[in-house]
Length: 144
Image (cartoon, rainbow, N blue to C red):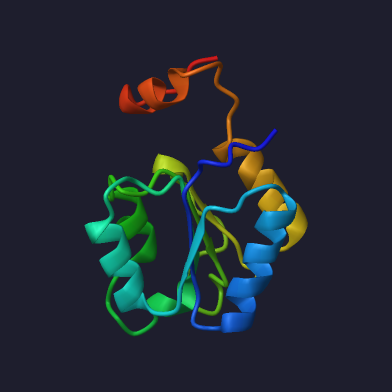
């Protein structure tokens, strides 16, 4: 059963892409989703958020020409627990990312499909018994 309290952020310039990803997540049972359309909006929402996002799904092309590294941004950010960066080839990111610290995943797909999102959510939405979910996250680990 999906954890309906997971906070998810989708960042893509294309409205159609944001809506497609959001609908796929809705079909999986996730509804606490914030879509943003620009890098400036993404940076602002993440920086000034009151609590961390459980998952941030980013189109890598948002970072094209900015000099910012999307992988480093997500790895070093305490406001982001898990990340999927997609359309990586178009943005010049490597096909395989050797070091996957802080649960950063990279996809070459133009838009993540239902199967990709389902696999991703199985890693993000780990079952935790009772009210230990918040406590386990604060400790930096997950409890079974």
